[in-house]
Length: 184
Image 1 (cartoon, helix red, strand yellow):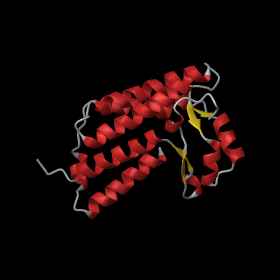
Image 2: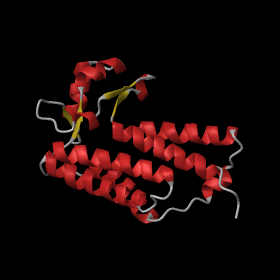
Image 3: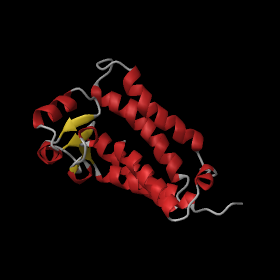
């Protein structure tokens, strides 16, 4: 999520620096906005509202992360003619695929040490999350897992996936492009 927020901030600054207008961004209308908002809210709220252990972690992942992600994917896909939305939908789709195939988002612990977060802390974070799982020899589509270290300030560090990167690039493109849309 932090990567997407970074992308939005960078796109807004770049948009302003290149003559874009915030008012143009405010006029951006997407197909399936309701699905998009519902999916994003469900992804944020459901993991906090549903007690861990109520159902198995694999069912939790499918219901409380997979279904909302599917809504986000479909909403973005409905806007495939917008390059940013197409890239973002591909990113969400890749994350959805790897998460459902592995009953969670695999995290490559050795790569995580590059973030400066200790392995013990990463293991603890994985164990407390029903969405993340440690990479094993049985991990499917490892290339799509959280294998890319995200460095920076302590609050910013973590692991991201190719899907996360594509999502961030797509959102940045969408925001930047919208800021340069002429007034109607």
